[in-house]
Each structure stands twice: as structure tokens, then as C-alpha cells.
Length: 189
Ligand SMILES: Nc1nc2c(ncn2[C@@H]2O[C@H](COP(=O)(O)OP(=O)(O)O)[C@@H](O)[C@H]2O)c(=O)[nH]1
Ligand SMILES: Nc1ncnc2c1ncn2[C@@H]1O[C@H](COP(=O)(O)OP(=O)(O)O)[C@@H](O)[C@H]1O
Image 1 (spheres, rainbow, N blue to C red):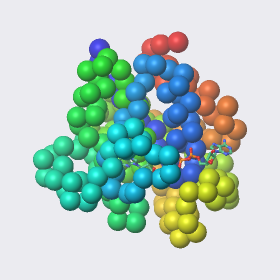
Image 2: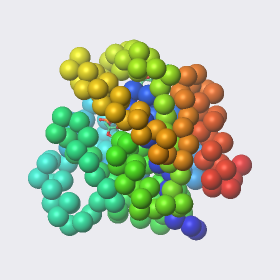
Image 3: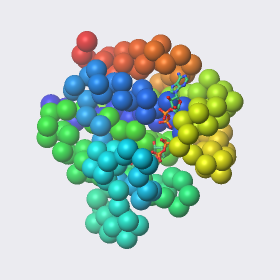
Image 4: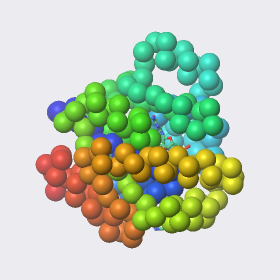
């Protein structure tokens, strides 16, 4: 099977995780690409399922081994990265990696995989909606919300660099749009 890859990116709080979880539940050919990260786990998150949680030292060792397809320092000094071994694990299982990463990481993967990769940018209807979603999610402190909103302004200016932009206004509509894009890219129904 061809080694394709689906990349979903968005400013934090736009609804990327929600849409990705729905896709994974409904399209068995897709497998979530578990990233390595040095942030602490949130309540309910499981090591080896949501992320491979690592210390900064462990992460640095992986960088030195050239183990990452891409990595970035995304927030508050925390590293996140896509392990090459994770993509290979999923392809070996004859499935397609679904990669949920930040805007810079998505652009570097696209540069590497070109037309083997479909990149979708999930756009929030407005910055006010983004603020409300981050606040309602209840996972972030005010400082963390402010940091994410400041970064969102910058990330939104890169939206046009991706293959497709989907506005996440109404969840069900946005999900259907993303699903159709993925099915078309993979030539499946
Ligand atoms: N570059 C890169 N970004 C990642 C990776 N994994 C996750 N991210 C991004 O890191 C950011 C923070 O993720 P997280 O801490 O889970 O917060 P959330 O997006 O607010 O739920 C999000 O934009 C993720 O898409 C990765 O492997 N590489
Ligand atoms: N279309 C939508 N309308 C309203 N709330 C939404 C919508 N999509 C997602 N949300 C909510 O917004 C919050 C952020 O979504 P999440 O998927 O965690 O974003 P991200 O992964 O991009 O940071 C969550 O509480 C989620 O339930």
C-alpha cells in the first residue's frame, strides 16, 4: 500500500482533536499517530495512547538519534514531535497515519511528503469563538489561554499554505467536510 499520510492542523481550541477522534471512530483505515511530548499528561490521558510522554532529556536523546520526522517546541518550553518509528508502525499495519500537529510541524511534514500528504487546516469561526472554546474546555489556565490565542493569530496567517481549509463552525458539518476530503484523497467511500 502507498505510504500516504493525513495531517490535521489548527490553532489550539479550533476543534482539531474533536474532529480527529470522530474520523478515527468512523474510518478504520486511519490510525492516530501518537506524538512524543514533554508536557505533563492531563487528567485521563494515557501514556502510549494520547502521547508518548517523555522527559526533556529523553526527547533530546531522540533528536540526537534523528528519530523524528519533525519536532517543535510548541508551548511554554514543551517539545512535541512525530517519531519516524510511529509512522512506520502504522504503515506496517497497512493503515494511514492521522497526524494532529501544530502549524509549523504540519508545514515541515508537507515539505517532506509532498503529494503523499493531505494537509487540512481547521479554522475557528472567529478568535472570540476560539477564546470561548478554550475557556469552556476547562483544561487551560488564563495564561495558557492567552498564550494559545496570541499564537493563533500568527497561525491563522498560514492557513492558505495548506491543501484545504475547513471552518469548524458547526461540528457535524465541518466533520462531514473533512471526512469527504479524506475519502477523496484515499480514493475510498
Ligand atoms: N509539531 C508538532 N506539534 C504537535 C505534535 N503533537 C501535538 N502537537 C501540537 O501541539 C499543540 C499542543 O497540543 P496539546 O498540548 O495536546 O494541546 P491542545 O491542542 O490545546 O489540545 C497542538 O497544536 C498539537 O497539534 C507533534 O508531534 N509535532
Ligand atoms: N464546532 C464546535 N462548536 C463548539 N464547540 C466546539 C466545536 N468543535 C469543538 N468544540 C469544543 O471546543 C473545545 C476545543 O476543541 P478541541 O477538539 O479540544 O480543540 P483542539 O484539539 O484544536 O485544541 C472542546 O471543548 C470541544 O468540545
